[in-house]
Image (cartoon, rainbow, N blue to C red; front, top):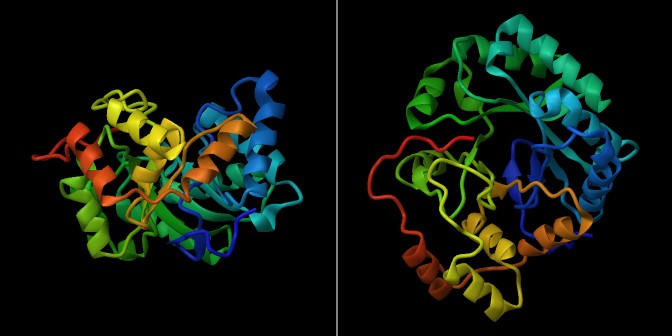
Length: 286
């Protein structure tokens, strides 16, 4: 279980550990369901309270896996789901949220995100989110895959600054958000959620877990390369990483990464292997 000394990040109304549980690719095969449910429940046992999912994952299948995992344990979980852009209109968003709630088997979501920006005006999506809050269907709302210009647009919308997070692809091999988006969020005390923190994808992906700097630090610390990668992602204390782990041993490995504080010397070595951006890059997305 998590200890009182476990670091936390304030995300909306909840203080959550800096490592959460992702569910991308879960719920796609019935033969994997029992293993996936056990993994998520093991994460709850270890204090990994935040579980991130989306209506898109497995066409709702991942939400069903989450529902089974949190059955009887809803009060231990901080549940995040996402609405597709084509469902982000006022009426459609409310209907999509109801479907997600039904698949998970809960009365509310702790956080509901716009999965990426589409053709629906941000003002309409924000209004829908506010109504869902008023109805008690969601506690807070946020966005995903929005770059700096998109976030500026959102902040101009009535209610836009109520956004609780921006969830983006981020790992040492893909640092584009550090050029401007990360600072923009920090200036507004807006926490970031990092998906694919183990370099599972992205246009700018470079080999991460096999890099000598990562493997060398891991060996010195008697840790795994994945743990070093996660420790790097959450190093600032204001980022939540959401790696997907479908097996209990990987969940335990991820949970232990929260206790690794990289030294300045180790961070310098990783900067040399994976330099921060010197120019604006398109937002990395998968």
